Image 1: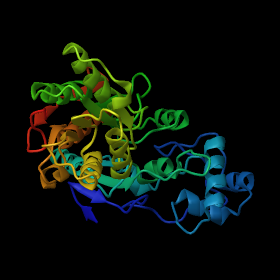
Image 2: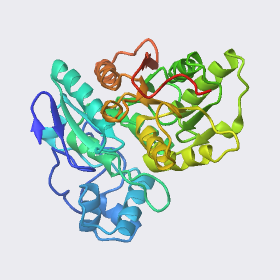
Image 3: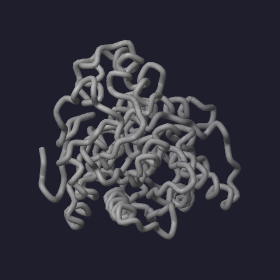
Image 4: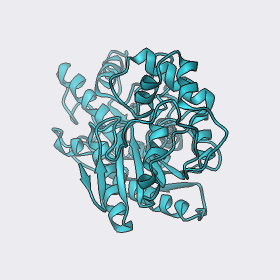
Length: 374
């Protein structure tokens, strides 16, 4: 679906302005501006991957009717040989087009990000192509076809939300001079990469301080992936608040999940099985908090009478939960809009004053927290 001036939504892994099949056998490597470079033809790529030229063309065009193993060989050959498809002439004349690549399209998180980008893009007179981040291959590396689609469409810039890039993908974007901004990057990006995020450390502090003010001392934490920037910062803030209050940190009170409901459910059961279980828990995402609720209900425990719970994000699920979830709000739509405005500056040749922009978080009190039980 295309909305002129505000946004264009494509299916996962797809596009809204895709060109036809490449001309086989004669397509040379080109820059994003269409100039010739010393690079391989599509026929050379096909020969390197051990496939036919039409099959290689299907991979370049993002067609789905290619076997996973064949797609892997072709994409690796494309990257290894440095092939860049020549953009369509009309696509190259579309300076008002930007790409938004998100981690997934099936969450309220993505909805908030899309809302922020859409509004900011409308104000800037831009159109947006939205797609989900490609799935990983059996070797654990992301598919690279979406990078080549950027030049095919003639996109002027890219927003990346919760997408982790490989060193070769960073190099590809820089080589082809495609400006990009990362929204809440999963891991710390290389120096010089522009990113927008939330004050995660301060959010962890405010969550723990809220529970401390209610008299809790046995406060646990269920975090997300250990290696993520946001997850580690939230846990660091939680630990800092406990230390400032003179509360001894208990290693067994910190558990890690996968930012999903199921893993949090399991980690909460582990906490409840401790000889001295906590009286409160800070959960590093609202989605995980729902899993914590499920574990407590299964054990016959009430929120907040038996266990106080604080989440993080302030997604719609936090308001729908019963009881309503006290959580730390991070301004997802504002983060996305800020990223789009920074991308516009980069596209104009400007450089922001700082490569990292952090927007403030705040605690939103609802009914899931109460005074510590005696």
